Length: 206
Image 1: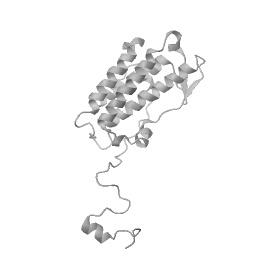
Image 2: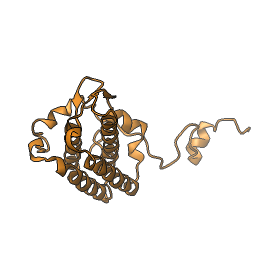
Image 3: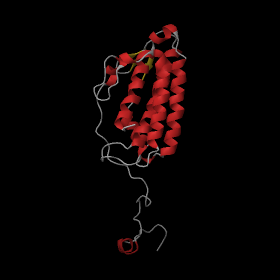
Image 4: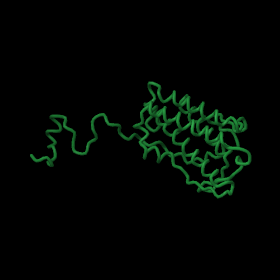
């Protein structure tokens, strides 16, 4: 039998040989995809979120950096829990998957802040919408390691904290716009990110 010849089905059955194209034994298998979240969450910069309790009126500008550091640390602890890789239901992310999502959100929002500041208050900063569900598939969140995710969360939370700590004076009112027409300033973008942390900590009981 040549090296290219497929393994006969009877050998597969008798000897437990993996059929051609099958993933290695024990390899993570792409899980069920959660239902897409089409909700526009930008309302959280103006009014409370009934699901997680986040209230934008309770946050001050100077408080944002502390919220990011604290939220990143709490999430880092959550993703290293013993059961953090287990999904509570087939279409619900595990704690680690939520952690990878939050780590990416921290990076995306920091990059948007940098775009706004780089435009120098001209109001011309534009950024693309970011699809978190697509990112989860592309980055294969379900394969993520808890310890590595914890390190990533701490690193990106600190980077976000430092970025928002550098915003001063009238920079808080400089404008940028998402490609769907939704406008943000460093202040409202910071509130949006703070809600992401609070909301997903609520999701994972962190």
